[in-house]
Length: 338
Image (cartoon, rainbow, N blue to C red; front, top):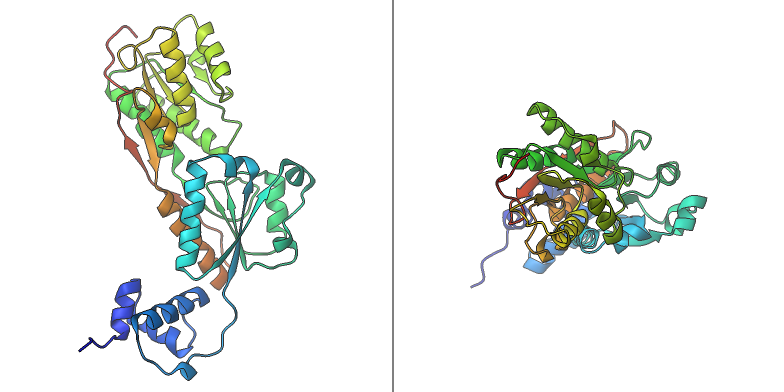
């Protein structure tokens, strides 16, 4: 004989309270529409019997718009994985997801997606950076919005962010603990506030450990291309004993360029990246990096937007998510003369 399905079993499956299940099935207030629909769907799938007439007629499933620049959507696999995680999380909450890429022309001319101007969505997720002016144009529409992996002092909105400063600090600390003292930094801080924050984390670690970074080793306006990095490193009279790079793409090109110049990694020079992208794993040697939990990012972003939909008033929040240092073969003890 099949075991009778109870409200507590539904609650345990969804990791919510029994009271929330009861509110959802009875049509009472106290749970979001997304949660209500998820409870009803789960109850039906589990074979729970209840009187359908007890459930009040509700509004249609919520719709959320996800927008990002064409460049962001092209950055596989990092933002591709982020997008897929957001899509899964939205589905888990019974939320429909509409997606629109923003072309450079639309960005510069402040042309919004029709699902925003026609108010076809209840909320908006903005993935990474587009432009400050464009994001403010979106915010002016009055639709609850959460920024994902981006923030700016002039964008007054909720944001879910990587703790870039602390992640970079820990990566540089790792190099210092290996005995490195001349540690360079390479990337382009103009591209994103995230990169600016990683530079700040680098500076904080160097200062707290009483180290001075030579100006020549702070290459913070460098394009992320093989040609530019080959040209830069090839023109330097001497190298630092370690490079901290603002993302794994930079780290990959730095490793490649140093090997062309005859350096051994990490025997002569250590290299550390950030993001734990495919670049860090396809490199030889594999690159020490800082991991960002994409699934956690998606879960917190969707849940924050749903909370904002339920409670549109109140101060905006910035949520900082932790990072994890992953030590691989590209970093090793300092063996030479700093």
